[in-house]
Image (cartoon, rainbow, N blue to C red):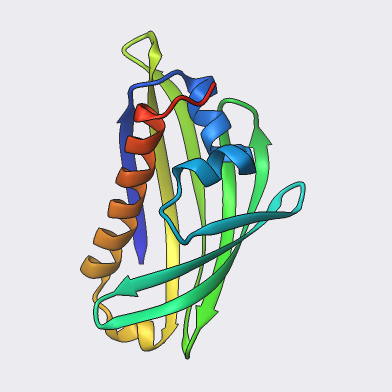
Length: 148
């Protein structure tokens, strides 16, 4: 499944970058019950309870950031599985100033996601809605938070 997400975030690029790359800051914007741990400088493990369609389970996922260009872009590689369902994928994200304003950032994400097991029975539309909803909530928290 191809997935794209674009969002205008009403904070500076440095604020968004910090919220995407610093574990202690990321954690403040995650939903209750979701934990992130940095394994290596570019590798993170995320533990969460996920509900998509008819499924609800605990999931552990690994996310690796590669090809990092500070305050501009990075690529991600991710995988996770639980109870006979799995997801693997990769993507590219970018940040830019919107309308030439230093306090408005455009975040773009383009990715390819492959599901396996029980997740194959969940429609792409439901998966896209779940991922978009998570990202919307995350960036709303970034906009409303007090991270420096």
